[in-house]
Amino acid sequence: MESVDENSGNTLNFMSQVKQIIKEGNISQLKNFCSDKENEEQVICSSLDLVSCFMDYLKDHEANDQDMENFRYLFSHISYISNEKELILGFLEQFDPMVEFDIINCLFPGLKIVCAKIMERDKANQTYHLNMVFSSFVYYAESLNLPKYDNYDPMEEYPERAEELKLAKFMKKCTEVGRSMLEIIQQQFQQKEIHKNHIKAVNCEFFNLCIGLLERLSRLNLEELTCTESAEKLIGKKSKDQNSVSQGPHAEPRLVLKTASDVCSLLHSLHRPWTMHCNMTWKNLISSDRKLSQEEFDRLELARGCYLYLIFDKGHGIDLFPQMDHPLFSFKQCIPGILSLLKQQDSVMLHKGLALCRYASNRLDPLTIHNRYLTNALKETNWHKPVSSLFQSAIHISTHCPSKTLRQRSGQFIVRFLDKFVWTDRYNILYSLITNAQHPGMVGYLIGYFKDKLSEILQQQMPIGSSYFLERSHHIIKISVALKEGSETDLLSEYNRLMSSLNMLRFLFIRDKNNKTQIWNIQASIEEQFLEPLRTGINLSRMHFRDELKKQSHPRKEEVSNETEFSICGTNLSTFPLMERKQALESAIHSFDMLENISIRVQEIIDQHRSTIEELM
Image (tube, rainbow, N blue to C red; front, side, top):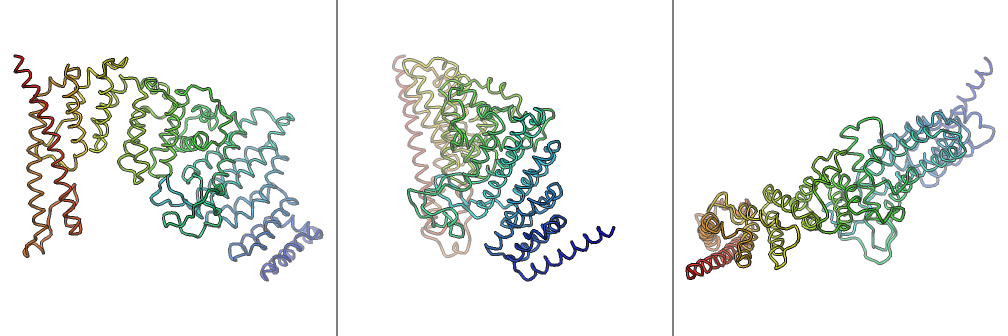
């Protein structure tokens, strides 16, 4: 009893001395004091209190580099000599979102030691400890602020933001700790100290860590820098959108890319790399005996999409993957990850999805995909209509994404992807897209593609299998020339669609003399329901805009104080500066003239054909 009291008194006295030294701010003396062999027993007894005491100091004071190094040493020293099962709790409770990363970073040398000791000495509870450690890692990673990439464009260069570097450094530390533990466990398995079923449970914990880290990586810019300055030096300087990046041929690799490579390497240590692009492999690794919630599924597919992007677009470990796999099989495996990335709002994530799209689809030959095959093949996923979902996502990006580069890439993908389908599916998909697309510019783009396909079909030697497309082409022609509001249609808002429709009619009336598309069967309805109301609408709109242009050019005094309610494509003209108002009005009138010229040409072709028929009769 006296011995216990004596030890307790010694511990209290020891901690009092520690607190006094800390209060004086002499961290070098603190290091020597705690490292003294005579104080080792007291350090062991006070290990948890010491961790809390040291962390409290770091939170309340701005320590210099030397002091930070001393604290890293102290955490390591305590870890070597103290009880690892108690100490790990003291370390992990410090992973608080309110604690700065630089402070948390001091814990990692000691934490690595503690985790290694636990893996070596407590084999039966390895899974429990792994879950506790990795859950803390992911929780803290999710608490770190994500960088903001304003007006992100993949063609531009962006130095690593401070937030990006913090997250990359933290995740790199996590993978280092994880790898050290995995090496110990794998060695134990090789020496038959642990069972195969135990390894499976252990791998599940490591896999969950990788999923958490990949989900964070999916939200970061993973493009290379080409500037000469290191990423570290760029922190605190203006970002690329403020014109601060200096160009150069030699750039240090981004830290976040090194971290991404480490995560992929850790994942490949758990499972054969050449099977990691399979949908069911991931599902079985995370949970083979229960159904995932929607949140878990979304998280898994987002992480998987990022992983596939890192492998196939950035080349991390691509040499470990088979190059002989069937392109269609590979594309099928990529679709869920692609869709998870494309349904996000963040341009950084959309870029990854489109890059993965480009890789997976470019390997496919034209006319090789059957819609039914893809739908049936992906029944085990939550994507019930994968092809439709993929096109809808691409159209949304093409019409709503703020990045011009991503809009263009998405539009290019739509038509290239359509070419991969057999003619039957190509027609059905195109009909659905044109029918349901709400954006006139996108509808016009698709009508242009439709015209190009008809041009291929109307060659002397018709492509094999294209008869289905040709026989039903008149249905698309009808919806392409529909004017729901007749002569009162907003011609400027519908300009791209109308121009594409008129160009399609001009092409078909010239090219399809044999009426293979049945264009001449609906010629009368095209004149009556499209061309005539269109010309009426053009005349009315042009007259209206010319009147407004005169008012803007010579405003009357009584009209100056009254804001005009005249609008162009839904935007009130009064919000434009005076000179821009005139330019907008003149540009609109020019657009009406263009529509009129082509519509007149279409009508002339029809009249010539009618005259030819009458002469023959």
